[in-house]
Image (cartoon, rainbow, N blue to C red; front, side, top):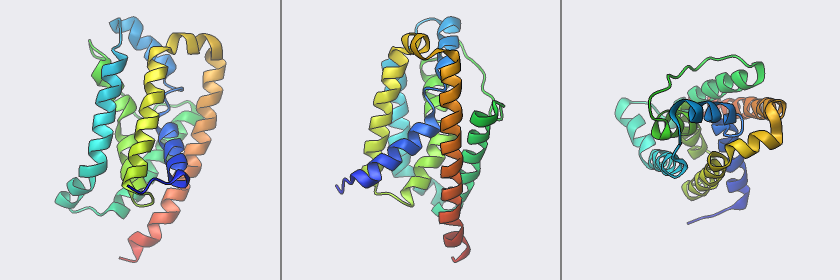
Length: 192
């Protein structure tokens, strides 16, 4: 295990921006109203299992279908760009249906461990050690669990406008991350 705070902190912040659990508070509250009680523990555990499993098998899945990590990282940069534009501009690019039960779907997947998170995890593998990514995932899931448990209180404290501001700030951060991810991986992809 090669734990490095200089890798854990950026990986944690990148995943935090992608998961955007603070910006998802309005959706979480809406889901609670529609389906009743949300099982915070179950949603957090399922999300962690999906994300950690993807750290280990995501690359193998890519190899089976003939895609290298650099191609996936560049594609991930475009997904992050789309997510950032959603956050900054307040538009909806990715649409999800709301089912009868919300603990696993749409909370654990795709809200927390969705396309953006999984793409980001594989992209992070091209820059960070696996152990540091796993620690970043665990830290993010701890925050996710805390937010799910106390979403109503957080909404009262921050307010609707506060949530919108935070969402836009993380959108700009995510936009910068997508540009960096693209810039770091496109030369590697082209030099193969």
